Length: 122
Image (cartoon, rainbow, N blue to C red; front, side):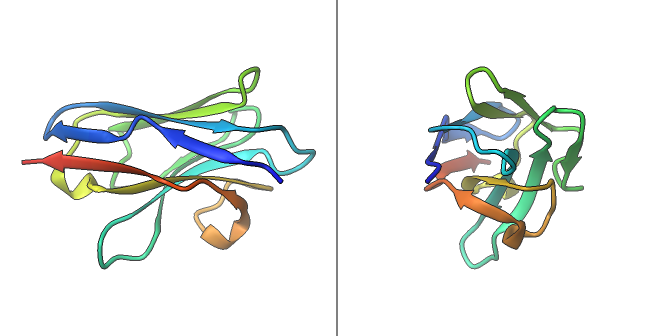
């Protein structure tokens, strides 16, 4: 089983930046596309950004496009999410996921991390 561990969450003021990282315990044959989701209190888990194994395909939610950047380092089995110009509405638990394709559907992912808290103060 693949283990995913997120790190980098914390408290930041509005307009600030954070960089999240997701480390995988090992590679799989066909489940290496990676995505970030987030879930705020009282809300459903929503797609934030996704990236293919090669990095050639990236996908962003409209709410974060232009502010967040997803990237990966396959040699280290890590995926990162650089978050700039943070807003209070970005406050949520952020989850890393791996699956067979880049999709906004959470059911398309087979492995999930435990999540890391991001809090943006006004």
